[in-house]
Length: 319
Image 1 (cartoon, rainbow, N blue to C red):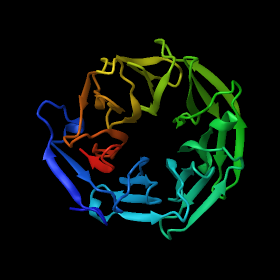
Image 2: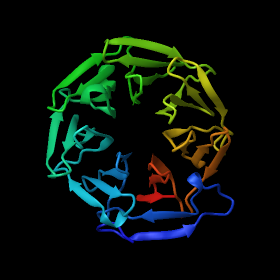
Image 3: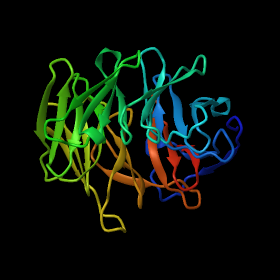
C-alpha cells in the first residue's frame, strides 16, 4: 500500500520490549505524498482524515486513515508558507497559519482554491489555530501579546492579553473558553469570547515552564510541564497528577499532547519517543522501530489509531 506519489516504506512488528500505544501490534511508515517532501504539522478531522503540512513541497495533504494510498496533495501557491498550525472550519474548509508570510490561509478541499489573509505586521504570525464558538478560527498572536480571531469571510479581530502573555498554545474547551499557558507564572489563562473576560487559573504542583496543553476526552485539560503532567478541571480542580520518569537527558519534556479515545494521553519527548499515560496513570514509552526515528506531531483517530510525523526520517507513520 502506498501514498499517492510515494511508497509504503515498511510494516514491521514493534520491538517486544516497547509497549504499544492503543494496543496495535504493528508500526507503519509512509513516505510523503510528494517525493522529497517532509510531513510536519499534523491534524485529524472529524471524518478520520489525517491532514499534514509539507513546507518543502508547499502543500497540505489529506490522508484517509482507512486508505492511505488515496492521499491527495493540495498545492498552496508559489511562496513557501512554513505552516505552523491547521484547524477546520464548520464548512469543511482547512485553515492554516502561514508563518513565513505573516498570514493565515484558507483551503477549500472541494475546489482546491486557496485564499490568503495577511495579519498586517511584518513580523506577525498566528500560533495554534483552533475552531472556536460561532464558527470563527481563533489563534495566538504572540507578536502582539494577545489573541486573534478570523471569521469565515476573512475578517480578523485582535484582542490584547491583559498580562502581556505571548500566547503560543491555545485550546478551545467545552465551556466555550479559550485556554492558554502563561509561562513562568504557574497559571493558565482563559478567555471567554461571549463575555470578553479573561481569567487566570493556578496550576497546582509547581509547574512553571509549560511544555504542552490539550483537552482530555473527559472535557478537562491536560497540562504538560518538565517531568510532570496534570489533568485539570475547568474549575481549576486537579483530576490527576502524573510524575514522569527522567529521560537520559536528565528531564522529560512532554510535548504535542493529544488525548486517546478513552482517558489516556499521548505525547512526545525528543529523547524517549512517544509517551502514553494510561487511564490508571501508568506511564509507558515506545518508539517506532525505524532507524533514527524521532516522532514529533501526533493525532488520534476515533477508533484509537495513533498517527505521527517523524522529524528526522521525514515520514508519516501510525500504530
